[in-house]
Image 1 (cartoon, helix red, strand yellow):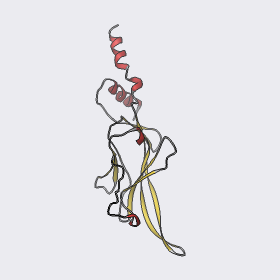
Image 2 (cartoon, rainbow, N blue to C red):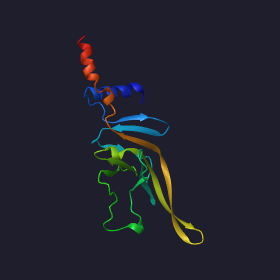
Image 3 (cartoon, one colour):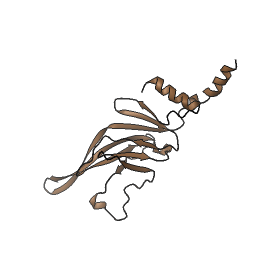
Image 4 (cartoon, rainbow, N blue to C red):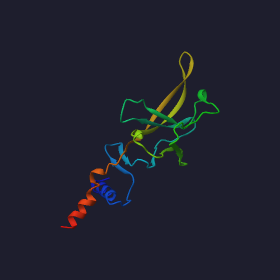
Length: 170
């Protein structure tokens, strides 16, 4: 996305034109910056495929504070399976199965506590045959990392409407 496109989106916000509620800015080779307003919903896309014994997992690393990585799994492990087990204990986070063997992540009513780096991957359990037969988890990560930023990022330009009116009155 080029700077002209970003400027059009920001100016659209200033004049209350609902051009786009989400802005994606390519910040480096594989990290996209997504800016949303508080209360918006956002879908983050996963490029990892699920197959027999291979499950999609979502991760969030917070961009503020020293919080541990949040891991959201699309399945339950047999040793933790319980009839009351909730796959998603966070009610604003939903997995979307778009029938292409992957799970996108929908975040409802975004708040600043949702900020961070999101990425998906796969988790696979393999039997390791060393001295004793044990199971081990292997993770592979996708190529998409999204930095989610929540806030009124266009505030620096929001008084442009009043300045525009002043300029027209000259």
